[in-house]
Image (cartoon, rainbow, N blue to C red; front, top):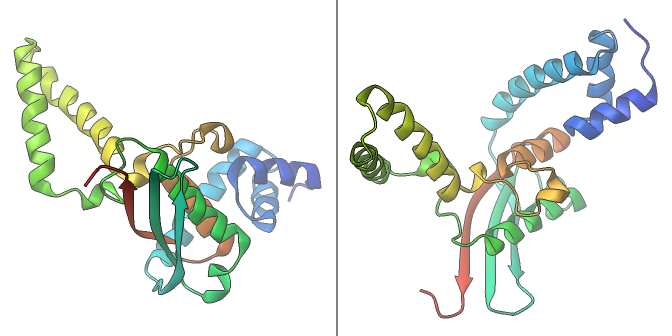
Length: 204
């Protein structure tokens, strides 16, 4: 195994959000190659995430965020497996950041994940996109590809996990799902955004 420095380990952690020991092991396995180490972490992360996703998340917190003008607010429930993790600063910060995003997105997301979008709603959007493509005279052999691309973009507009956090500078353009995956990896627990609600003065 290649010897790796603490600086290399920290640099990989900064890039991936993975635990320090995992970064060190991945770099050693990759012979010091950071790009290969990232691939190793991704494979292991996906495997461990799959194991975590099957575990019950019955603890967590509800966070409220109200904008400074007092006219916009959000409630978010995020679950984890243990009360210990629910009380950590990192977990609570994540929940607050989700609430800030939900309150600051206009229009706000409608669903937590794209999987929650009802088939009827997705089919209705598909019909609209297909009709528009045909009106524009697009060839039949490219309409399906165009429609699929538009559906994917639409899903990002309505599904919370698909969206990039509104504080893009702080999170380097990462999606809510990518940030959620990082906190799950760091805590070693199944972290789930369960539900959210947005309140705007004058809107039902």
